[in-house]
Image (cartoon, rainbow, N blue to C red; front, side, top):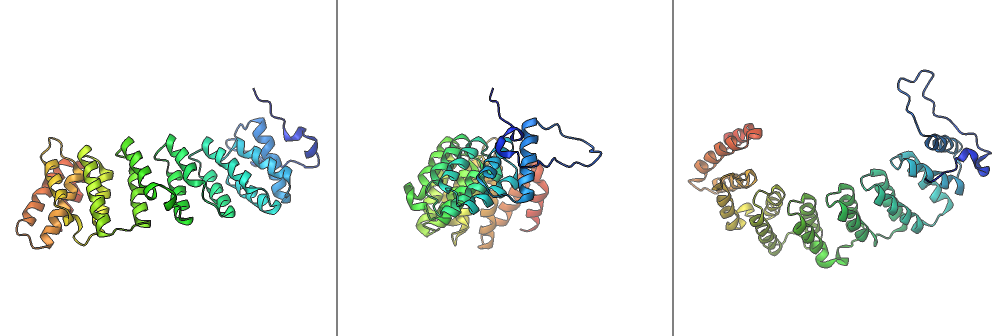
Length: 306
């Protein structure tokens, strides 16, 4: 058991009058705080009131953060102290990295990390840092958001194999339904090569390969649609897309995602003057309405627009 000395018992804090939490004379539901939490917060409120800037105040914020890392006010005041004392921000980046590892889904720790990296002007550690977090949870929104920010802000794409696509493919091999990885792939292409005709064709082929592994994969179908929107021909860019949709349609339990793409294809064919496209689309809307009960009104709506 780790025994923590209360600030009330520390010699260097005897000149400070702690400020208790004021819940009013008759609190409806008083919270039973631990003695350590109450002590640290009472002293934090005291230095916040006097706006004390000192090393001991910085130490106090660290203690409060250990107790409650989601306290925005403490993180904000800590940044104020760091700036005023011209503290070693490299050490601070190490401190917050440890906090992120312990609390990877806490918004405040990620915000503080970004603020420190901005002050340092060096995002070279962020790729490796986010990969450590994503190794434990490959769908951590905060880690992906931070990674996107760092890559774009410091132009780090070239520091990774194939601008980061190799990393994405490793994640998709582990979980082909990882929507975060598919989203990141689109982000990488958008910010590097762009959707040139060669890139569009390559991405269509890549996605079709993944869809042949798992046909009922909403993430991959969404990615395919998104890529095709970058082409003048849309989903008609590659005939293999329609062929795969038709294969899915014949399965015992057709993929709604595949049929949705097929409906978009029939719609494009109708716009292009295909004589059979409208009947094909109407029939498919009926199928989707029967299969996808939750959204049957939507498919009926699509039917009225043909």
